[in-house]
Length: 629
Image (cartoon, rainbow, N blue to C red):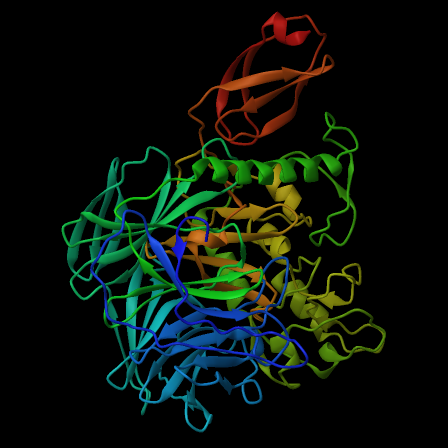
């Protein structure tokens, strides 16, 4: 952390020196301190290095969904419990003791993002199979927790244990009104009985701030920055105060790149503390990176290149912005995107007819075609098509797992774990593919030797094999938008849809895209720092199919661009450039150059009106002769 002082209270240091592991720990004082420094202090209370040794946490590098510890708990006795998701275990650090490890991988090899603790047991949410299981802290026994509810655990924001029950916050959309609400599901851990209640929660952005309602309490919060901000309410304190995160867009940067601060507000909406977050050393971002204990202490976990760091935050009266550094980092990302696209072009000024290798998984060479700026389907129709992909059921046949005649194939985890005859849900991830639902079912039904199809493939080296069935991220989005030709993420970034103007929030079924990386469909964001998306995903989460899930708003979309396949209107002027052969136009709102606008004789003025093919704005054109030389 470069923005605040670090004070080490507990340190678990692992050194592989002469095959000896050395660790140390000191008691954590969980009593709340009321002193307020000028700027925030991050007290480091725990560090565990990354590695393959028993005493290390696990990281799983992946270009789309890297894996790392996804959450933590600080208990009243000062012990810290870390969800070591990659290694299928929970690490417990206690005063004066060696760390303890509760392994669940031998019984339940799944990727856990959410967990809670109560009455001697840890409760883990298995988002692969939408089940809950418990781990006994003393004996390590793993048991299923009964739950008489049909809920997608991937859209659960948090889970807490209270008086023999689990409470889960989850988002739910009304399919008729398309309105999304936050709900609390209460599950009795003994008999599985459930109850559900809508949470009285709303966050509405205004010109100068936010009007929010949290569990019936109203907050009128002023935000002074003129830049576009994302505001999320993370947690509540016992006195009615709230913990929030404010993410301010870096000005002049095309991709999503922000300066983030934790802020606390009292019940009157007055800001009582700031803590500037340093994201520069992050390997990946945990799903639940904050925790508020019963004494209203606030803790923060980071997964950095050297390992996991956990801090207790003492909020400051103010903070010193590092926006200049944030802008510089964002512009480096812009330059990387520009270089990627230019490297894919045979000629920087000729975007028609060149061959694209589709490194994200097209599975074949293709060329830029005429841009698709608007689709004919409605948002509701697109959502229905997306839900059909994630809710489709199909029966796994023995030949769908038969590798005879195949090479470099990795089956989706949920396909690997299922036996022949099992009914599975969701179209499997298949790198480089874009099967329709009917096409997928037809392909997996063929059983003749030499013709049978494999159900899914998360390996990126065998996309050309026509005997693999499924879809990847861009293939899925293309299909639900009505685009039957396989398009890669570069296509979606460059030529499909319109970039959302600065300050515009996405709407249902708009998309976030990162060229040569990933693309997702936007569902909703309710102000609780979680965004609901639908995507075809793979990676350390082991979902490996089309699914609806929550991601952390403040961190997941860094480096992405927000676009829509429906028309939008820009509100700012544009400018011309010339290479003495053709002219092109750059809209200063969406920031993307449209090449070529037109070709004409240098020195000859041209007047008229055109639409920016990226953001859709109709612009009046007057080319000055000085720009044509």
